[in-house]
Amino acid sequence: MGFSGHFIFARSERPLLEAPVFDGLGQDQKAAVHTLWPRPGGWQTLQLDTDSWSESQLPDLVEWTGAPACTAWTFDSDMAHVTGLGTDGRRWEAKLHLDIAAALMVEDPEDLDDSSVWWSSPEFAEAARLIHTELDAEVPDVAASAIAWAASAGVAVPDPQARIEEVLRSKKVFAEDVFFTLLDALGFPAAADLSPEHE
Image (cartoon, rainbow, N blue to C red; front, side, top):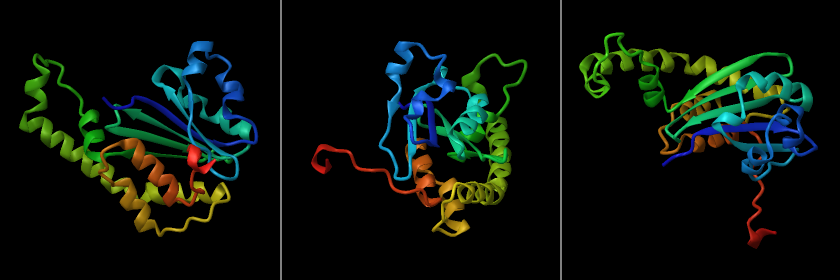
């Protein structure tokens, strides 16, 4: 079973969990938060359960850190919805694993009796195909926005836009792996290896 929840990526000299946006979490919720390997420059990644975070909190996090930040809502590791926000208020969004994202975006008919029949129908497949086409057509603009967001964070994007678009269209098994690959491709420093043999 895959992971469902949020990854939050931001820069701070203090532990990210100290941000006021997390003050509402109970002790059990805070104890369940995982701090992933940090990246040089103060970049941190938190992994939270689905109910512990809302994208509406992203502006408050950016204000507290004084730096661009992004969040990736992940559904069962099958797809992810990424939202990035700069200190200038500019926002960008991306869907990772376009095929699955498109299928999840298909609206069920009002008279639906058997969801399994609907999901295996030609009508469902066509609706998903049309949504996928729309999402795919947005990839170049999404890539350009992500590059601009990374540049506003002071990062020199090493890869050409075509590489960013390739990552956005990636079909890696786990959506969260695509998210981390995207951060790498945008030029954020590699996560530190904190395994015992590298301490």
